[in-house]
Image 1: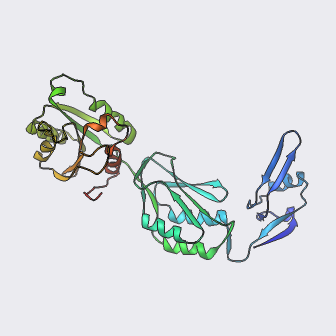
Image 2: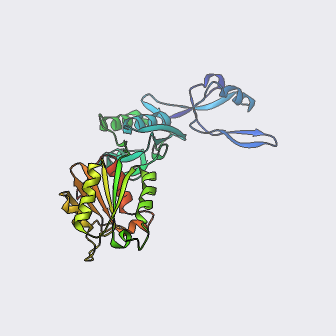
Image 3: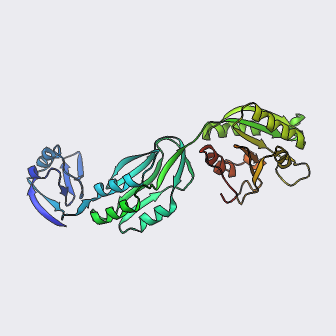
Length: 315
């Protein structure tokens, strides 16, 4: 890479080799053009107004790319469905969500791409719920000018593969069963229903119906089966998930004949969550912590289920 002095009229499409300061008396003094900028036709009058008849441009050897072109080529091969690209300046491409969904990252590919010299890919966490236009990742290369061989190495690594994609989330009909003698008999007000409706507004889901039942295994089971018959595509229970003798909700879920994936999770808040499947319908047994904390295990698991993932105990 060398610097070459040329007339500004011949600089269109070339890369500026150093910062160029513009001074407007009483108004502005600062870099009007930065090292690495590509000169456009409309820039020529501005350069002349700045007193520039000649400038130094970067003379690139054959087989080398400007950082912006290199970053764009990498961004195109790492990007899967549900993602848009946006140039953020200084050679950085920002990947944004095209719609609400779940960010999925192929971590092995991400690590492999970042092992390539001078390639820099930053990212949000895998399985993060995202909204439309959320920033998901950034792609750039380290030097201003980079060998095309490096970019070809990344492109070869990602043939027919993508590092990032956004899975769209569904908006299922959700049946809710609230358990507890104290709620059933009106001794205390139900707080689970309103809490879940706020969660639905955030992540997705529409309340089909809420049924309040006492702490009786057979009634919990029957309420879940009734909601399934009514067209529920997702089932949630609230309360009764601890090891107290009166907490019989896990037994009610089992009584439906559902496949129990996990009762208990190494997550706080939310140790006592149950995940089960009644055929293809997910059942989430939620502990009382969902009422008291803004973010719990529910907020980790529910969006993944809305994205159509069938989770197992390892998940």
